[in-house]
Length: 129
Image (cartoon, rainbow, N blue to C red; front, side, top):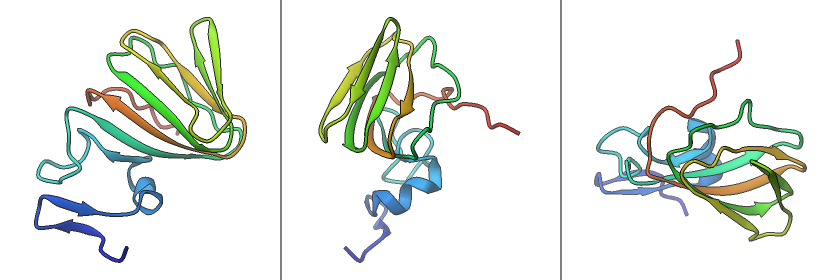
């Protein structure tokens, strides 16, 4: 694929590995500019690349979205109230809904595709300064 970027305002062609680092892994969601084909208030999609030992800075509490995480490669542990789920084989996935607190930990270098809906602001972990 050699086209990249917006094509006629309604089509975007890109590469997840190259585009993801530009917005903390997020390829699509409310945080993209209005008018960008990747702007959506309905859904968010992330290409998450996590080095071994990477972990979420704090638990998400009071979740308002449904989430689907699909393991592309690596080994990834999802922490849920009273339960831990290990995604170990390509294609392993977990889904949770509204009200499910969660966190995560990359046991090995991992790549995941995350889909969340709806796309709502307010869940970013504050930057450590």
